[in-house]
Amino acid sequence: MDTETIKYELKLRGYTLKRLAQEIGVCLMTVQREIHKFPNSERVRRAIANKIEQKPEDVFPEYYNSPRAKYSPARTKACC
Image (cartoon, rainbow, N blue to C red; front, side, top):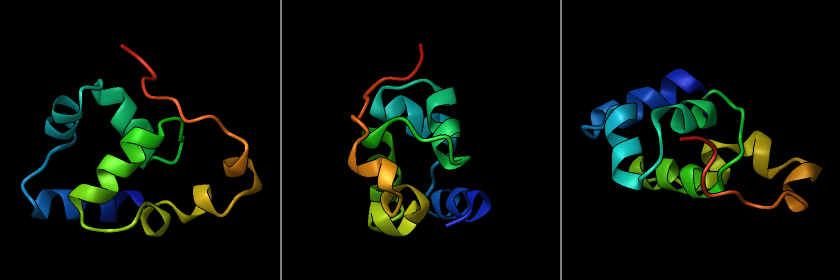
C-alpha cells in the first residue's frame, strides 16, 4: 500500500499521524518513517495496519516479503 493510501485510510477513520503516534506512544517521526517505507518498528507497522483494518503484510508487503524481514529484530522505539 502506498504512503498516500495509508494516510487516506487513517484519515477516513479519524486518525492523523500525530494522533496515531500519541496513541501508541512513539514520536511522530517514527510513524512517518514507517509509512514512507523506512521500516524499523514492527510495533508501529502493526498499529498502522490495525487502525486501517488490514494485515501488516498487506499494508507493507515490501517489508514482509523481503529476505531481510526474516532476520531483522523488531525495534519498538526508533526516536524520541
